[in-house]
Image 1 (tube, rainbow, N blue to C red):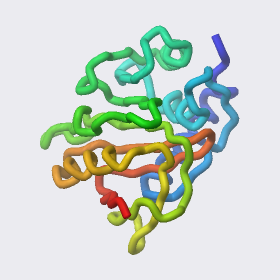
Image 2 (cartoon, one colour):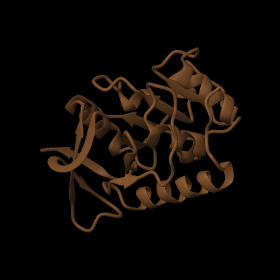
Image 3 (tube, rainbow, N blue to C red):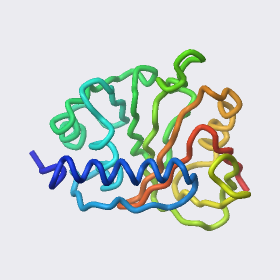
Image 4 (cartoon, helix red, strand yellow):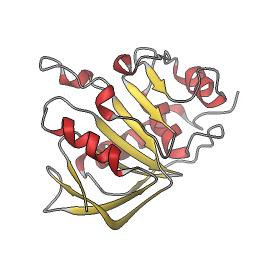
Length: 192
């Protein structure tokens, strides 16, 4: 089995702080603060984030098969159970660049427990600040722009359908290689 973190404690703390910073600053491109080499098919940023957030009580869904080396690697290092039901997932890893699926298919939480929603980690072909999407909401001064290469406009439109269900919704982290960007459920995404 491939190695996970060099130092489980220090690496997971560093990644966790970076994820918190990203969630507080939607649309800001962050770099994972450690070196990690996940199995092929899982971006380093996705691997680091999932290694930090998963444990034996947080079910993972992915479009990758249960027996895929990367899923087995995550399960070995975190103890996470794998689920085939999107609504049962605490975290979801979407690696199909062109078809990440409908974010509304995942658990949006409940009014009593909105924190029980699914957090989506979506792998992309690229992330940059070019004008493609406009982001507004808490943590953003006025607005910011973002381009998520490989994420279809349909995904953004599907996400817009669940935006007004706040406090329900899904938090999303888009990753490419070692960088990532957070788009919490409170951030409005608009296609330009």
